[in-house]
Image (cartoon, rainbow, N blue to C red; front, side, top):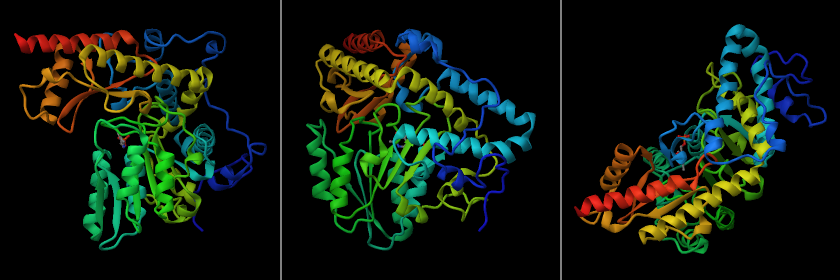
Length: 438
Ligand SMILES: Cc1ncc(COP(=O)(O)O)c(C=O)c1O
């Protein structure tokens, strides 16, 4: 059997799979080659979320009202520092790094992040982004003419394209069920899937948190409904890690994909793909390289020579989350998204696109119809114009979404945000309504 040829020296293992198999008692992590940032002060000092976090731990420009973490994340300052230190470290002795250090370090990151997301480390691989993982899974499903794939109308646009492309190539058919807004409760979604998902479907794909309309899917119930019909489920959790309590094993998904470079604040180019053990043999990497044929983890760990520093910086990201506490971070972000949503609907006389408890660190808030009544229909181009106006006139980043003839703002809440920023959004929208009147 071929393998990734690397020197595992003192690691009591001769390859990636063996190193992952070692129990925690048998396993010794490789020491970092330099001093990494630590967050020990938060062991005794209560963190001040909001402006203080932003100044200390993020690179965001001071005068921008940044309410769109959901788009491309925002890196933790110290994680970027670790990644940059690795980039320099690599170049001091590239052979030592790529031949002797990299794989054991990637295994260590995999072991740590698997524990963080609640799954067996042998069922998880690091990939560059959710897009790569989603393509990997979707392309691994054998399809023939007349066979079916399933998704919802709210599925991420790029994923719909992946599914349609596979159908075009194989003669399979993509079935889509429409989510009606505003959503009343979780049961509406469970019933929708139950009614529309046909037995024999080859794969059903669901967002854990929808991108444009960021309600949290009752994913456990949805998976149960699919499994009752013997249909495998791919969960696109691109927004989940760092914005929800994530415990992958408890969901019973067949495939679970999530980004670390979004809500967890890792450097860009960091995502995870979980695959149920029985399906791993059929889930092959899009990029075939040295590890091919040597087991699931070995196949994905080396995708050719590239910059692996974002993966290695995950240690710093996890140090941050573990020191501050996942609970305290999520309490802050969820509470802020809820308070901000509440305040905006009251001020604008509108409603949320789903009940408040169905949102996590993002919320979808109706814009006042009088803001866009003169611009019928309220489509993507009208939404884009308002979004651009908010940016150009107010230096405010907040996406405007067109959903079934209404416009909404999708607000994000991270640890660097505070209520005052959503008050600025409130006033900016009221200001624009005045402009329209004059
Ligand atoms: C639901 C969903 N899936 C997939 C993606 C793709 O993520 P990435 O660009 O990191 O591959 C996104 C990005 O925002 C998303 O929101």
